[in-house]
Image (tube, rainbow, N blue to C red):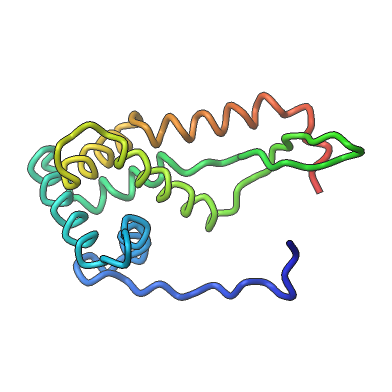
Amino acid sequence: MARRRRAEIRKVEPDLVYSDTTVTSYINKMMREGKKNLSSRIFYGACRLIQERSGQEPLKVFRQAVDNVKPRIEVKSRRVGGATYQVPVEVSPRRAQSLSLRWLVAASDSRPERTAVERVAGELLDAAAGRGGAVKKKDDVERMAEANRAYAHYRW
C-alpha cells in the first residue's frame, strides 16, 4: 500500500564497545521481546569466543561476515498484464546491509550449537569464511535473480 510520504530513516547510535552502528543494528535484530541487554551480552560473548577461536579482531570478522552476506541483486514481483514476473533488481546498500544482518540472525538461530553465544560466534566465523547458512541464503537469492534475468526489461 502506498504511503503519503517516505518513511523517515531513524538514526542508529553506535554501540558502546566498538563505536559501530552496524553492531548496534545487529544487536537490535537479535533482540527478542525488547531484551536488548540480553542480546548485547550474547553478541559481546560471541566476540570473545571469536577472539579465542580465530585469534582475529572480532569487529573485523563481523564486518567481513556482513560483507560476505550482502546481496548485490534480488528479485521483486512485478505484475504485468495478468502475469506475475520475478524481476531482478539491484539492492540498495541500506537494504543489502539490513538483509545481511537479518540472514545472519536467522542462520545463527537455526544452528545446532547449545548456547546462543556459540551459535552467533559460529555463524559469524562461517560467514566470514564464505560458508554457512547466511551465505547460502545470499547465493540462493542471487541465483534466483540470475535465473530470471530474462525478465529484467520489466524493471521500472
